[in-house]
Image (cartoon, rainbow, N blue to C red):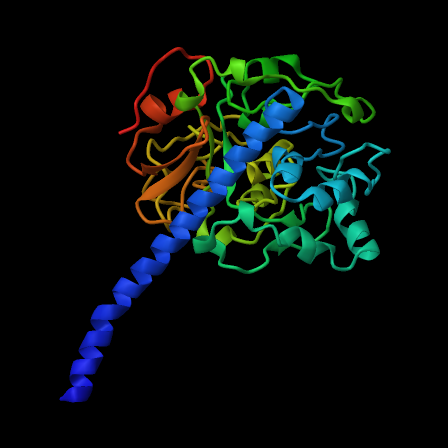
Length: 361
């Protein structure tokens, strides 16, 4: 009888312990976003502008670093930033900060060459816990280590800036400085840096915006959120030009920001499945944030696209049940219910200059 009573008490206590642990992990995740928010503001105070989404690329030949790397000095990772800034890998033509060849031109030499010179480099770069949600990844080092032509190796993270590209056919084209209309029509909080679109031009990039460009006000601006990663794509960071490969970049490395690899550091607030590269494909959209263990590709209960290959792979979504945490422009962090409409509320909080005041429920 005593043993039975003890068993019942343990069974009652276990869910409470698990809930307390999850509450602690959720708080740590919120603190990560808060620290990134402080870094965004410190970057602005230091450089006089908003950290760029990415330094860009010259016609897909070289992938440039994303804002996550540019924020390293402001997240207590100065040495790691200097490690990037002082090396040139993978045919990067002497660019101050670059991550090497991209989009199938050659294998991504920045990763393989860095490992050859510094064997502990993968562990070093994956040790940055600020960019990881403890519920999804725990305390484990997390990086993708393959280095073939269609792979994008590097550290894996759980946060992304929202994209709202209102002028381009493809959601990811806002990274290209060579196409003027792409970044002029892009209305998200972080935009590509100013440079002439060549490998040498990227060496002297300039910031495009200040906080003044967020004309709706910092308290009405979504800056960062938890990105959805389908359960069957965690740890996969392949980057190809065909749909059969693109469905495997859900957990793309956060270091780079270009072409389909942009999903590692940015997500389309309105698109659950971006347009494919073949004619006749259209964009499918879910109006709610992806739930935990949401669509993992193929047919699902949200939408069925023409090929089904990319459903659910480029959305926002948390590993915390029922909510998704977002960083607001004023530095605060909000837990937003998965049922909050994206088109009528969240998209308006992403666009920097729509002039509409929206209140989160």
